Amino acid sequence: MTSRDELILTAIIDNTFHYARTPDEVAEINRLVVDVAHPGWASLLYLWDRPCRSVAHHHVEDNVYPEHQMRVYTDPAAGWGAINFLDETSSWDTHNAEPPADLELWFDPAGGSLFPATAAVPLDAVRVAVAEFTATGQRPKSIHWQPGRLQ
Image (cartoon, rainbow, N blue to C red):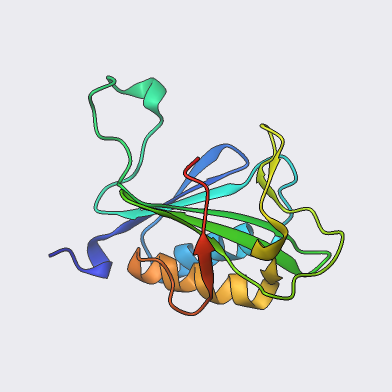
């Protein structure tokens, strides 16, 4: 089994790959993902035993991503965000039974698709869930989930 010290966090933020190995690097990526607005892109997170790479730089049969992904979109000015967690068998969106009205959180800004309104959760909850994922690579237990889209 791989220990956390041997795992590499890959974050695709604003369509640019970032890598983190140390606690300070992970904390900086978490801050960029949650507390900085990225209106054109949802951020993608992977925790794996190697860095993820662009498909353009590998043969199609190469395994360049693990079988899990966390997609994060936040609106820091509004104080809300949404998360999708995808693994090899299922997809989950964050869940809030009392979401704010008139808030758009983008699942895929480039493709024009939104998270469901019930996926909106306070930014503090997103921050905790992202930190949990970047420590474990698992779907965070600190937040409520609902079935999500399979992309």
